[in-house]
Image 1 (cartoon, rainbow, N blue to C red):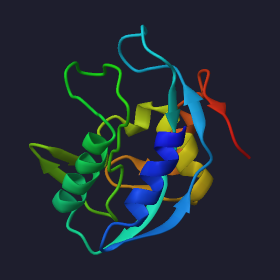
Image 2 (cartoon, rainbow, N blue to C red; image 1 turned 180 degrees about the vertical axis):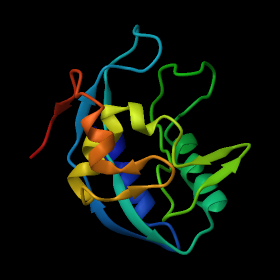
Image 3 (cartoon, rainbow, N blue to C red; image 1 turned 90 degrees about the horizontal axis):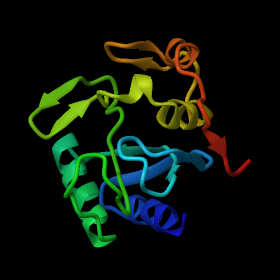
Length: 146
């Protein structure tokens, strides 16, 4: 949890970034191999003047500073920072897809997002957040903070 809280501070400290909201923390079982610890998840809303590709580069630098190694897909990791949405933009590049391609199936993304976003938030190409929540059960997701 401390790494996540530290990453929050580091993201908010980036030039061209301002924190607007931060969700409660949630615990979830890992995606992929199950022989790793549970994940702690949160969603942070920011405003930024950074282009999406530069924001991703900065987030990956924070991950690296926290010891993130990309050895096994969905393997254990110290920190995983993703861009879920970038305004109403749809981005399809080799190293960046926005909206995040798996977000509609991931309770650990949708429920924290719903804590800080309106139910009618449009997710480009997927519909309103409320509709995504309606088809994505919590499946063991545990909220850790009020």
